[in-house]
Length: 93
Image (cartoon, rainbow, N blue to C red; front, side, top):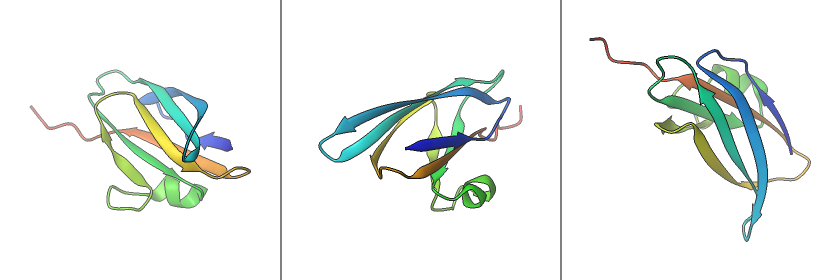
């Protein structure tokens, strides 16, 4: 598994920890939240352009997360994966 990430001041220092389970290869993603970030949107896939341009109704969107970590399951060996973590929109005061 090879991971590529997009630099983002709202979610930095992404750490990928490979794990394994009965379903195969898994990983644990962890990042540091940027200043003022309450939640993050996570995008994950095997195509850089698709992950980079994805929106919340895209197949690569894994969800809005209130904690700065996520478990990914059933990965394929010898595959390049791309990750994008962005700060989710914050409601105006």
